[in-house]
Amino acid sequence: MTHPRPFRFGVMAAKAASASEWIDTAKKAEDLGYSALLMPDHFGDQLSPVAALSTAAAVTETLRVGTLVFANDFRHPAVLAKDTATIDLLSDGRLEVGVGAGWMTDDYTWTGITHDRAGVRIDRMIESIEVLRGLWGEGPFSFEGSHYTITEMNGHPKPAQAGGPPIIVGGGGKRVLSTAARLADIVGVNPNVGEGKVGPEAIASMSADATEEKLGWVRDAAGDRFDDIEISILKFVTVVTDERDTVAEKVAGGMGMDAATLLASPHTLVGSADEVAEELIAQRERWQGSYVTVQSDALESFAPVVAALAGT
Image (cartoon, rainbow, N blue to C red; front, top):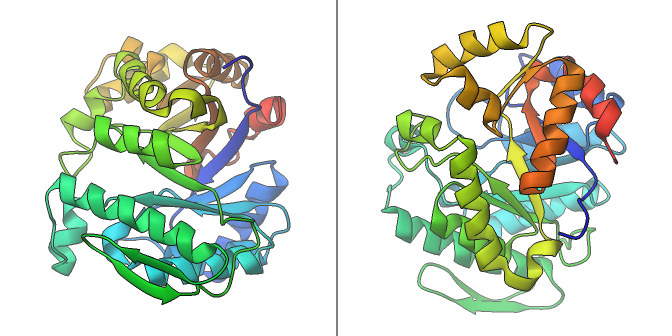
């Protein structure tokens, strides 16, 4: 890119014991300057993203809400189009729609939903994105694919954002990232979770070298539209501390990697607020990762970095 995109920051949250706790999280994220509250989509111990994001949008004014990511296999795209258009309309255009092929083996085991091979799941996701955009658009839409058929359906309501909310597609494999580069507004560069869990393969793919390869896939597939893509990098561990080396050794040991690899990874942040800010600037220069999302346990400790970098 000729110049980096300004930083914006998201926080990944999934659970709350009460309405007041969830509302407090959303309001705090807005007050601390985060751009977006984002949610995963699994059948385990988490809130439903459709209901929870609707609530978060209703109690905030500027905070964007979104998913990282809706698992496509769990919802027909016509249902998802209606749910997301409704949230976007009622939030005055503050929704981001992350769509994924589905990956966590437990979700399929628990529910009995068929866990097809990755290629089939990705094919379905690609069709789903086309259906979403078609139903968000003006007038009746028809589509006939290998997995979905839509016949003269005029999606209602229409979203507040013209053409629909921005679509996020993320992944760690070549086909998903290449697809994201061609179709998505926001590309999430993630670990490879092809094992169906966060195991050794995923941990290994968090390295700087692995990320370099992934960005190469994105650049190659995006071609001339690369400059129009926002690159999102999710942080799995964020520890703001003045004892960088000591904490990095401890965290790295728990993840099965050495401290140097952990500190170089774009998916982990350890250090003082100033050190973390410098690291993010360096990562944006190298990988264009301007959309940075941390886990909810770092919501407050990471806030000085948000204050220093958001919009710059």
